[in-house]
Length: 240
Image 1 (cartoon, rainbow, N blue to C red):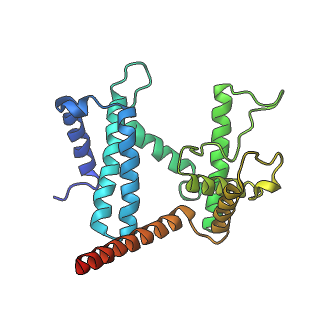
Image 2 (image 1 turned 30 degrees about the horizontal axis):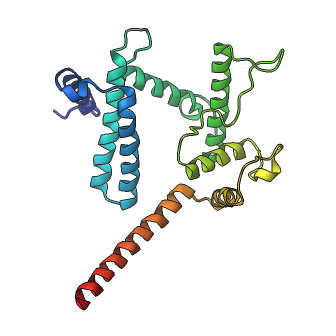
Image 3 (image 1 turned 180 degrees about the horizontal axis):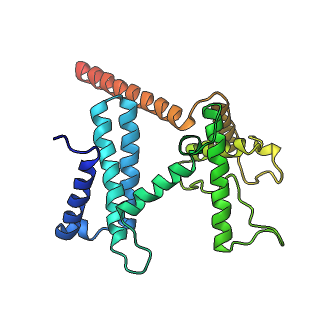
């Protein structure tokens, strides 16, 4: 009899439980100590996707999945009322996907993918506003808390991808894409910084992902440097 789809995920949870209880290294890990691995595995997955090697992608996705299961297992041990387990993580994303796809799980009709994106953003904005209100965050006097299109953007991500995400979010809200077109234009920004930001905005206008474009150029440069190094060594060996 064929195992149910997803059955090996349950086995992974069991393996993680065993490691957490019986491996000294796994037992001492915390969210903070695991954070670098989550970042590293994510970048390795992006590299694998760029390589076009399906086996490499599969392996790296497994490494990312391990990080999700590991973090959930660490959280499961908390006794201060903030704990959760892998089922809570899955429940949260299931609920989010159901809420944000009313055209699939409800009776909403959409015209295409662009409208799906607009609906997703509108639902997310409403969710954040409700969360702010529930948390008692202040807005203007007599008004509910005001959400921003930029809420939730991780400011610690690499600068090129950060600029791209900010531009995407702001563009959907109708905000200008140029620094000079906004009130109280940023001070302390060099001409080079403005030029780099403008390049990211240009990539967005052309439908390109600037982080991936720059990575592709960097990989091409690395390949050429290695070829140059090989040639230089060959010339040195031949002349010696």
